[in-house]
Image 1 (cartoon, rainbow, N blue to C red):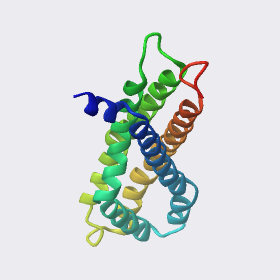
Image 2: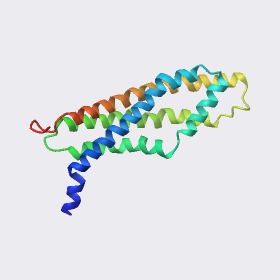
Image 3: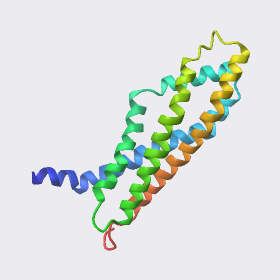
Image 4: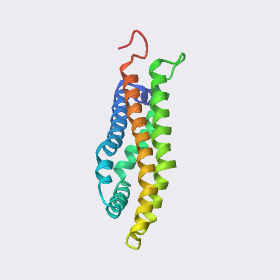
Length: 178
């Protein structure tokens, strides 16, 4: 039992947890940032049919094991990392990891599930080949602006979650720790 506890809470696991938390939250922040500043503006230049077809393809392609592991893993790793360093009295790094957890779980994961996924599902159900030019224009209007707005919010939340988690790991747990 002692070996298991030492393994779970030892320096080796702490260092790996830091790497996993910062790596996964950084990857998600980078993904959303890339969409916000390059993918979405590029797709915005396409025709209605081209834009909708591209978004359908992207939305289907992103549902893969690697993305889902990092996306959901970050939502689990951040709160677990905060829990692992909790002591009484609570330290600044704990509060920073708690804040990063809330930012990610609510502002990235939750917002994706409540806002972006329903938009993606509606777009996925839309039959592009049977749609008139007017129907394509209506679908694009109903999809593009809300999706991009929510993506910008989750991009900001993801970047802040990453930065706050990094601050937590750069802040000593106690005044005499480094």
